[in-house]
Amino acid sequence: MIFNSQEKIFCWARANPVLATALIVVFARLPFILEPSLSLDDYKYLTTLPPKDLLISQGRFGWLVVERLAYFFGLSGPYWYVHATIFGLVSLAAVGVFTARVAFKLEHGNGSLSIVIVAVMFALHPYHAEIITFREAFPFYALAMLLVSVGINILVAKTGFESLLLGTMFLLVALSINQLALNLVAVVFLTRALISTLSGDRIWDEGAARLALSSACAALTIITCIFVASQVYGVELESRAQILDYSRVSQRLSEVVSVASDLIQFKLLYPIPILSALLALLCLVGVVRLLSRAKTWSARAVMIVLILVLPFASIGVVAAGTVFWAPPRTMVGFVFVTAFLLAFSVHGLHGRLRAFSSCISVLIALAFIGIGDTVALDQSRINQRDQATAIAIAARVDKLSLQKIAFVGTWRHELGLRTRVGDISLSAFAISWARGPAMLEYTGRIWEIVEPNNVNLLREACNGLPVWPHEDSVNARGDLALICL
Image 1 (tube, rainbow, N blue to C red):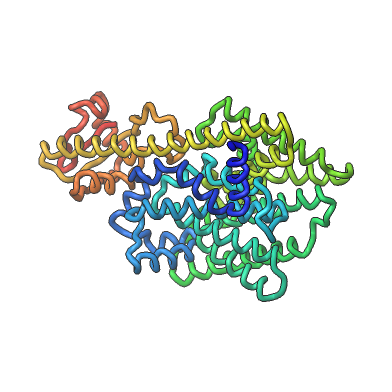
Image 2 (cartoon, one colour):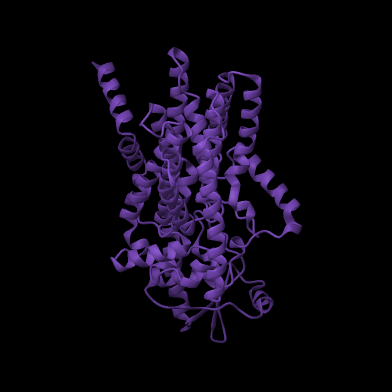
């Protein structure tokens, strides 16, 4: 009876991979849905939409259009965090299914249970837990990935000029929202090439040619549009939206190699030695199984080259910008590669080996869920700390009958947060531009946060004084409340 029920569940999951994956992912990420925590960016967007000039300077004019349309229908930034998070999670589940189909060359059907395994591992990867904390940005990230995955399927599964044009339009809109979508195209292309080599098919088939041509056209069009938009609106492009200068190529190569090494060791977010070892082990098993099933040594040689290229393709467009900006959320390509290898380590096994690999896969999935829960809880904890801090600062500044505030020194009050990496679980009081919006949010009052012209003079005024949260760390200096950190 139990085995019959299990088989029915597996058959249902094979027949409905998007729905099966979405149910798993939404349930696993409930803490993000139920907890109204805010990131640094979200503090600003509670009172205003992301400025037009900002999105144009980042090359995200598609994001600008979609966001303004959403606002017209009452969907405004972090205010719709519950539904936006659900939308994003379901989108990631669909992205995992759509891209896995293409990677396994099963785009004309639902395929095996491996599709669901890839999709679940992809959506629940801890790198995605990081982007969910950015309530305003997450749905647009998910939308871009969803659009690009649909475009990939159209380009690979269909023939004819109309489908080529339609697929390119999907890629174009996706890249106009978030250029990281191009990384997903690159790794799907390479993993599909791995499967083609494995089965003895030609790597450069019609689907690959259409995908390459469409991606190149979409990327060039977006680069042109970004340049034109910046000129028309008189906006200076952000450094990460500008192309790397040729003179710094060698430096960038060393930076890419360093990040690729961190990726292989799963170091970018919340490293757990045992989990990293299990991930590395199962990914290695996936690589070995891929290579062992190749029919010729020449095929194995091609596959080795493709596997070695994958970590660098995962970094992709991040390496092309003037500033090397490589936080976990930019590694969408590596997330898919990891999910693909984890699924392949289980795919096709029988007996005890399959049971062993399946158990490890379940443990890894549970670990992914646990890390996500920790990220969600830490975000809530830092919000609560910031609220208490804002109220305490307001009370002490009120005693001085002042309105202007200057923070002097470095914020150092984030102890006990296990996910304190980059701008994850980062206090609003650690970043100058986030202090004003945080004070407004938690006190309901507008404060003038001053960036002093002479920082050294204020530092001298804090010399010998106790630092926050000591009672004497807030002092009056003229019409300025000086907070020594």
